Amino acid sequence: MSKIERDPVTGYTTTGHDWNGIKELNSPIPRAVIIFIIVTHLAALIGWILLPTWPLGRTFTKGVLEVDQKTDLAADIAAANTARADWMARMATLDFDAIRADPDLMARALETAAPLFGQNCEPCHGKNGIGGPGFPQLSDNAWIWGGTSEDISKTITVGINSAHPDSRFAQMPAFGRDEMLDRTQIGMMTSYVQSLSNGFIANDPSEAATLFQDNCAACHGEDARGVEGTGALNLTDAAWIYGGDAASIWQTLMNGREGHMPTWQSRLSTADIRMLALYVEAMPGKLQ
Figure 1 (spheres, helix red, strand yellow):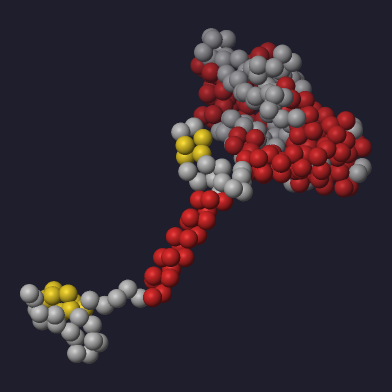
Figure 2 (cartoon, rainbow, N blue to C red):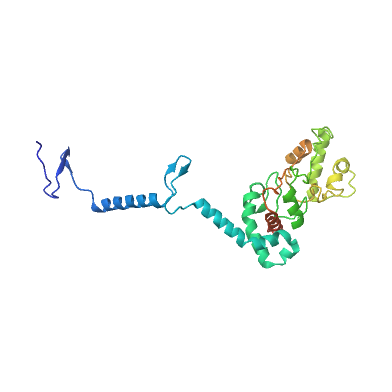
């Protein structure tokens, strides 16, 4: 029978383990730890009884309180929709001038549209509508299909080159790929189009200007300022969708362009679309 050894300082017995003269004491678990373990186990047991806890195949135990966060969330959403039903109905039916004339309604529209823009528009048009390669900037005054709330609302609704039956349509021909212009002419047109940002020269007798009038003026206008509502850009300003450098213009003339914007009619409500239109119309930079 082994001899029980007791530590003379603490009074605790030893476990018999010895490491180079250092002996392990058989000290009891602190009372605070025991109390903590008991309390946490009791809390877990109470939680199992009161709250949804254990999976049971395709279902789970509901708990005495029958707490259901999905139901609570649905109820909260329904309450929020009810609370804003009145002004949302006005948003969907009033004309834009009437909405702008109502400060409270306009404030609600801009506040509500901000997250809508972030969720649905920002991935392409960028934060604050700054645009990016292939996607036009929305915070300036350069518009292809019109920059009023009415025009913007229609564009959001039907899209551009989308599946909507009333979609806006625009396509830049591939002058080089489809052999409408040869490479020399493409080069001349590239330099000419790039120079338009410095101002259009009327009655320009150059060959490049003649090529422009013969091939481009029908869409971009004889003065190269574009025709709003046709999808043709103003080539005399600093706003470019695909880039205004020589290489980008060459690619555009050679291979053409065909942008795409989806129709949002099936995803957003009429009120949502109209709020977004007001939000985009009011973006910083519009009146500068």
